[in-house]
Image 1 (cartoon, rainbow, N blue to C red):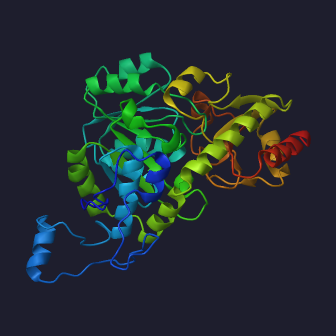
Image 2 (cartoon, helix red, strand yellow):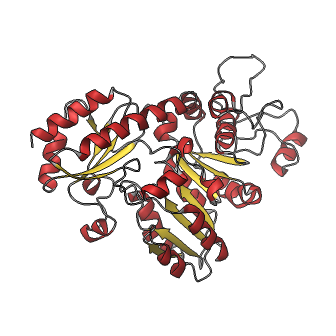
Image 3 (cartoon, rainbow, N blue to C red):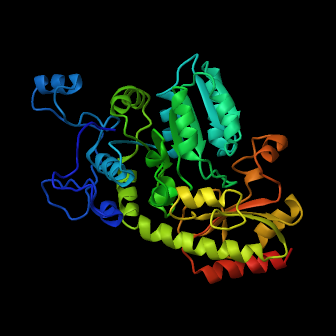
Length: 403
């Protein structure tokens, strides 16, 4: 969370993605270390009282306090901004801190938010329950239905929030069309891009104003450290409302976590592409399994928004959701019969992880609300890992036979 530019002067925005992921934002200390250093310091010292005064007034660009800015966090922010093709990135402690920070820095009492219904459970809570407590009107729509967006955005609106693909239903929303309608109503468009990853989708090029990530997921990618980030080309908003919210409420990322995520970024493209390659094979395998009644994956021709996914995304993603024949008891039986794949509510990990959304990530929703967005009691969400695809399919196949 810093206005300080850490990017080397000779760094080129024309670098290919793999180069940006390894060298973006690199700012070596006077020790000239090969790997980025970890600046584990809460504060910074000043040569004079006058220098401290200038720093706090914004007249001198320097580090003040790690809740505001930090050298290691700054490298991570610069690298994420470069990857996304954006001017600004602010790192946060978690992905949900990024979601709430982007919304809270945009909305105030009396404002109006329009959001897609198909949201991660915690995002749904923020939109439906938390923000209305602070006087924000929230309207929820079917994100795949343009006519619902048109009706909802026929009134002046301050913010639009959506996930595409959504978690866990993998709905695809037409970003250019929704963004154009939203901008006509005066709304800032905020997109959670965690399922697509910055490798397969660039929301800012499709009309969005702000992109948020849980860097806990694919960016770290190995289940080690939590984090999030808010990315935008709106420098006035980033340097103004967003900076003030983050600075004074304190959802700061740890320098150590930023360093871990920098290391994760070096292999992000390689990992995500392999995840997706295996996910495609596994989705096709599941479509032919007798005990599977529905498979949701943007890479399948059977996906309801397959054409839109191919248009907006350069890859299908790393998550496959599917329904087990029967109900919750059969879904649980299937999960409990898995040998290699772990039951966990995380995703984007090198290990394959599976969860039952209706009783974990979306358990707080009523049964009616879950069904309204396509989450059945028989649905499971698989985050495809980096194990050999044949081993993943073997584990799934054996468990399916046992139910």
